[in-house]
Image (cartoon, rainbow, N blue to C red):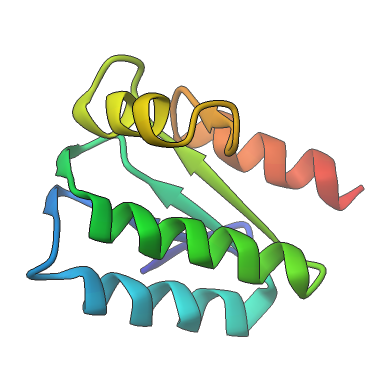
Length: 110
């Protein structure tokens, strides 16, 4: 997990699926516990299955329920973006890159 200007960034590279969803969940929990904010960066994620998607949705819900925020960055048209669009359209706003996701979290802080 990295941090940019105090905002935790959880970058997923390669595949996020049943085999590593527990690690993703633990990292997201740690990030949210630290600051109440987290950016999930899926720009370099080549595959996202429904179990990893569920982990991200639960983190987004936990953040919102605790007064925090979770943002997701994802390249348009990549596999994770297609899964978000198919499974949970218009539920979580996707930002086209890391900078846009961080900017959205900063705007909401003000």
